[in-house]
Structures are given as structure tokens and as C-alpha cells.
Amino acid sequence: MTRRVTLFLYLLFLMLPLYWLVNLSFKGNMEIMTTMTLLPQQPTLKNYAYIFNSPEWLGGLLFSLGYVALNTIISLSVALPAAYAFSRYRFLGDKHLFFWLLSNRMAPAAVFALPYFNIYSAVGLFDSIWAVALAHCIFNVPLAVWILEGFMSGVPREIDETAFLDGYSLPSFFVRVFVPLIASGIGVAAFFCFMFSWVELLLARTLTNNRAISAIMTQAISATGIDWGLLAAAGVLTSIPGALVIWFVRNHIARGFALGRV
Amino acid sequence: MQKSIDNRAWFLVAPVFMLVAFNAILPLMTVVNYSFQDTFSNNQFFWNGAQWYVELLDPRSELGERFYGSLGRSLAFSAIILAIEVPLGMMVALAMPKRGAALAVCLMMMALPLLLPWNVVGIIWQLFARDNIGLFGWTVNAIGIPFNYTNSAISSWVVIVLMDVWHWTSLIALLCFAGLRAIPDAYYQAAKIDGASRMLVFLRIELPKLQRVLTIGILLRFMDSFMIYTEPFIVTGGGPGNYTTMLSINLVKIALGQFDLGKAGAMSIVYTLITLSVCWVFYTIITMREEKEGAA
Image (cartoon, rainbow over the protein chains, first blue to last red):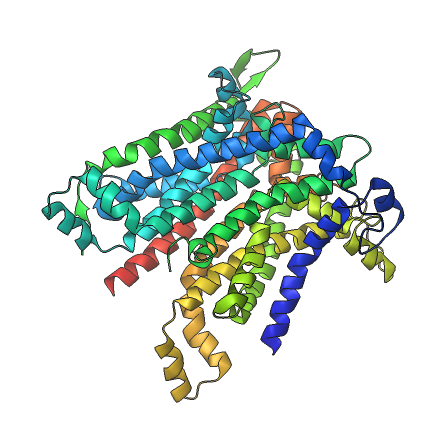
């Protein structure tokens, strides 16, 4: 009984701020500032209409989705072979390398903001999805390696050896046999790459001319006279991709969050 | 079975190594470079020795005061949120339904805050906690407790701590849930036969099995809370005064706001060294345990 109550209270605590966000997004600014009501008295869609009619906001949304997708592809394609190496072989400096990789996941983004700005400007990538996608690799690649290594170590090594005896080469074994075996692990890693690239603000803001959706929203706050309704609607819209992704990985969430290590 | 020794594995690791090296070593060298130099006018650098470090680590200087102040706040913040999130996350994990549709709904609701862009988390809490338009701020004021996070230090801390608990407790809960699910039913049956109490089952069966996931959870939460930037920046902007100026907010102010490259460089290096050493301790604990389990 107490368990039910704990769980109920916790979920209520999680949902209340979200409910309030949705509630405000359907109100006009006048109503938000003057009355305190649990449901919109004069429901309006004008906040949403504004976003869908503004090229800046819509462009920001597409720009963000662009670098997130690019980052996920880059991270997974370099992390897959590396994770295989870590899970199957011992080689010179493997443990140190693994720790060094992980330490980059933990490095504060604030430290890298300024040098990134200089480097990516110097190579002419500033203000493109490539700059943000590559910069986000610093925390997503180590994470992807860590997750994939966990899932791969769960696959018995005998499978590799049998396949090699059957005449598979390493690349063809990897693509035809191994990748299907760890498909759920790849899904989980992709989910995390998506998640951490999508939620990040500091680097995305530093490396672009306020093109990322998160940066556009932040600008809207610092501008004089905050448009609360608009901000709420933008919050709802930017939450949707995350909710969709959760739906796709719902069966793997628990194991995924344990990084394949349970 | 033992892993085979093969140095050709480096070829598989090379792409990752190069990509991360480009992103980590190059910028870090730039920062080290800045931290030993000073500049008068544009792009005219000269050697400054360890001067910035001396100033940074001297609590009497203006920079030192800012550094130690924000370091203290960052550590306090990490300590508070860990003290709340770890027990709460465990409680939630124990209370979660074991299977079925209820579990799916529960998991999805819990994962939702984790998938929100961090600035949206900030915006949500700003909208939720403001005293004039927010449900939470308004309610607290309505029952007679003065609450305004833009001018009271306590209120601003309540907001950023609550926000982080809201945002990240689910991560701990999901980790623990995954850990609990890995416990074979036989353990519980044995405990039942022995007549063990609920408390004893938790202490002797569940807690030891949770150790591993909890280490990962605490590591992730410590690191992410220690470098937290976006959420407090959006909600409080580091204010009122400097009450919620965390280490990262301070650093960004110095580096990108004032373009004080030397000071920012020295601060970055010290900041990185702190995170690196904590990370190393956790990593050692995790690998030692994995090796012990592998040997057993």
C-alpha cells in the first residue's frame, strides 16, 4: 500500500510541471499574467500558429534535428568497431584508453566552449550542423562505446570463433552475424546519442549563430517582455521528439539505462 | 574464456581515438596554452608563468574568491541532489510494478523528463515556480510562505534542487529497477523459507545486487550535476546575486562573457583535474568489482 502511494506521489510530482506547461501553452499572454486558472478559460492556438508560421523557429527545429541525426550516425559508426575491440581483445593500453574515453564523457562542456569556437571557426565549420554534430561526439562517442561494449560482452565469444571456423571474415561476420545479435544494444546506444545531443544547449549555442532551436528559445527569454505562452508552446513542441523516441525503445528502457551492464 | 591478446585491435579503435582526440586533446592544449599567457591587445600573447594559477588558488584575490565560492556551491549542490535522488530513486524502483501495461506506462512517464532538452527543463520550472504565473510558486505563496526565487537565496536553491530531483531521479530509479530485475526469484524464495523480514531482504539481497548499478548512477549524477550549466542558467541566471552561480556558469562568464582567456584557462584546468580525479576513483571501483566478479 505504501508502495502504491510512493509511486503515485512521485508520478504526480513528475507530471505536474508538464501539465502546467501544456496548460500555459494554450493561454494568451494576457490570461497568463492576470488570472490563475487550472484550465485555459479562452483556449487559443495562436502560440502554436506563431511557431509554425515563423521560418526562424521552424528552421531551428530542423537544424537541431539535423545535427542530432548526424551525430548519432557518426557516433555509432565509429563506436561499433571500437566497442568490439574492447569487448573481444586485449591490446596495448586498452584500459588506459577506455578510461581516457570515459573521462571525456565527464569533462565539463563549459571548459571546451571557447576552444571549440576557435577551432571550428578556423576550419570553416562554424554555424553548420557539422560543427555541432562533431563537437557532441566528445560525450556521445565514449558513451556509445561504453554501452555497446556492455551489450557485446553479453554475447558469448564462442559465437565469434564458430563463425571464423565457418570461414567468415571479420567484416562479414560483424555485419551479417554480430550486428543482428546486438541490435537492441545498438538501438539503446542510438537512443542515448539522440538524447544527449538533443538536450545539450551550451555547445550548440556557442558553435552556431543562434540557429539551434534551444538557442532560439533562450533568446526569447532574455528579450525584454517575455512571451510566456509562446515559450510554453515551444517547450511542448520540443518535448515531442523525445516522447516519440521513448515510445520506440520502451521495451529496452530499463536495461538501456543500466548501460547494458545488468 | 579469456580475451585474446591482439594489438591489431588498435585499427578498430583508431577512428574513435582520432575523433575524440580532435575534440579533446586539441582544445585542451589550447586551454593549457591560454592558462600560461596574458594578453594586452588583440592576439598579442606573452608568457605569464603560473601567475593565473596562483591568483586562482589564492582565496584573498578577487578571482580566487569567485572560484572557491562557486566550487563550494557546486559541491554543495551535488551533495544535496545525491542525498535526495539516490534514496528516492531506490524507493521508487522498489515500488514500481513488476510487469504488464502498468509497468510500460510507468516507465514512459518516468523517462519523459530525461528526454527533454535541458533548456526546456529550465523553462518548465521557470513557468512552474514563478510567484506570479507558476502553479508551484503561486500555491506556496498562497499558503503564506513567501517564495520568490528571483530575490531570495533560499527560494532559488529550492527551485534548482527540486528541478534537478524532478529531472534526474528517474535515472537512478530506472537503473535500480534494472538491477532489481536481475535478481533471480530463487533468492526471494530462499529468504521466504528462512522467514527473513522485508528489511532484511532489502539489506542482504537487494542492496548488494544494486551496488553495481548504484555506482554507475552515482558517478553519472555526480558528474552531470557538478558540471550543470543550462538549467540554473535559464531559471536563475546565477542569481539572485551570486547565490546560484555554479562553477560552470562562472567559467562561461569569465571565458565567453569577459574574454579573460588566462583566468578562464587556469580555472578550466583545475576544474577538469577535479572531475578527472573523481572519475578515476569511481572507474577504479567499478573495474575492481568487475574483475572480482569475473574471478569468482
